[in-house]
Length: 633
Image (tube, rainbow, N blue to C red):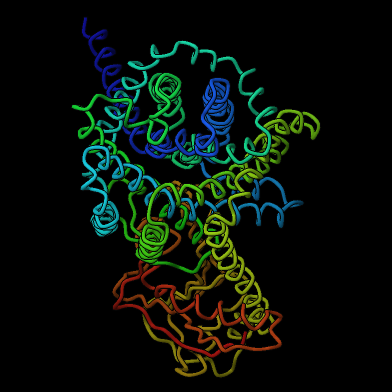
C-alpha cells in the first residue's frame, strides 16, 4: 500500500518541478516577445495611416503577424531548434561550439557566422530595454497628457535602477518574473477577446492566403511594413538561448498553452478594434482596455517590459561568458550571484556597456516610435545567421544530404531574408544604430581572436619542447638548486616548456621538488563532470602534466579542481607548500606583426581590460608568483 503513495509523491514532486520551470520560462524566455504587442501592430499600420486603413490591409497585416509567429517561432524555434542542443545548452555560440566539434571544413564560415550572430544579439540587448520600457510608459499619456514630459526621465530612472541591481543577483527577483508575466499574457488575451467581436471579419486573418495577398498587393509600402511586422517575433532567439536554463519541454508547453494563444488573441483584438474604430490607430494596444483598466495595464506593462529587459541583459551576460571561454573575448571579470545556479552571473564590463548604450538610445531617439525604426535589423540578422548555421547542423549532426537540408531551410531563409531586406530599408531612419553596434562588436571579437593567434605563433617560435628541457635538465652537470614544495606552471601548450619556468630558473636559479605543467582547456560542451575534470600524466620523478577541462558555461576555478585532484593518487600536494607561477606579458606594438596598426592597438587595449589571470582561474592570491616579459606584437 505504500508503493503507490511513494510513486504518487514522486510524480507530485516532478509535477511541481515542471510547473516551476514552466512558469519560470514564461517570465524569462517569453518576456521579450510578450511585449511586442505594445508597438508591433501600431508601427505596421503607420505607413497606411495618412490615407486611411482599409479592411483588406488590416486583415492582411494581422494574418501576416499570426503566420509569422507560426512559421518562425513555432516551426523554426519551438519544434526544430530546441532540439539542436549542445548537451542541453542552446544559443548561437553553443551551436557554433557544437558545429566546430563536428566539422573542420567550414571553420572560417562558422566562426564568422557565430561572431555575427552573437554581435547582433548584444545589439538587441541594448535596444530591447529602451524600446520596451518607453512603449509601456507612453501609455501614461492616455491616462493624462500631463505625464508626457515624464516618460524619458522615468525610463532613464528605471534603467538606472535595473542595471544597478544586476550586481546583487536576480535570484530573488526572478521568483516574481514568471507569475507577473503569466498575468501579463492573460491580460493580453482578455484585451483581445473582448474586442474580436467588434468586427468578426478579423477572423479571416487566420487564413494564410490573406497574408500572401498582403505581400503581393501592398507594393513598396508593404515592404516597409514587413520591417514592422517582424517586431512580432523579437525575442524569439531567447527561446533557443535559454534552453539550458529551463529545458525543451517547459519552453514548448508554455508556448502552446499560453504564450502563442495570448499573442494571437491580442493581435486579432487590435485588428478588430481598428476595423470598427479607425481613430484608435495611434495606440491600438492600450485602447483595447476600458478606462478603469488603463492605469493598471500601464503599470503591468511597465513591469513586463522590465522583466523583458532583464531577460536580454541576463542573456548578454551568458553570451559574454561563452565568448570568453571560447576565446572570442579577453578574460572578463565574471561574478556568480548564486551558489546553486551557475546561470546567474554578473559581468561588470558588459553591464556598463549595455547601460551606456541604453541611456544613449533613450535620449537620442526620444520616443518608442523613433526607436522602433532602429529595431528589427539585429533580430532578423541573428535569425538569418541561425538558419544558415542550421544547414550545417542538419548535415553534420543529423546526417542529412545537402539537398534535403536545403529543401527544408530555403523557404524559411527566403522568408527571413525578405524581412531582413525590409528592415534594411530603415537604415537611414535609425537602423544604422544596431548595424554599427554589431559591426563594433564583431571587430572586437575578430581582433581578439586574430591577435591571440598571432601572439601564439610568435611565442611558439621560441618554445622549447618540454621533453627536451627535462632531458637536458636531468643530464646537466650543474642543475639548479632544489627547493621543497610544489610549483605549478600555467601554460597553454602542455608539450612546450612554459616561458615562466625558464625565466624562474634563469633569474632565481632554483627548481622545486615537484613541478606541475598545468594546462586549462575549455570543452565544446557546456559542462564537464568532475570525474572527467582532470587528466594527470607523470613525465619524470620531478615533473608531471596536469590538464584541467571546464565546460564553456563553467567558471574555470583551478583551486576547486585541484582539490578534486588531491583525492586522486596521481598528484599529492599541500596548497600551502604550492606556488603558482604565471607569466605576465607587456605587449608592444610591432608594425611587422601582420596586423594592421589599428588592430594592433585595439588588441593591446583589449588585453588591458582583461582581469588578472589569478582571479580568472580562482588561484589563491597569497600563493601566486608572476614573472613579466615584454613581447612585441
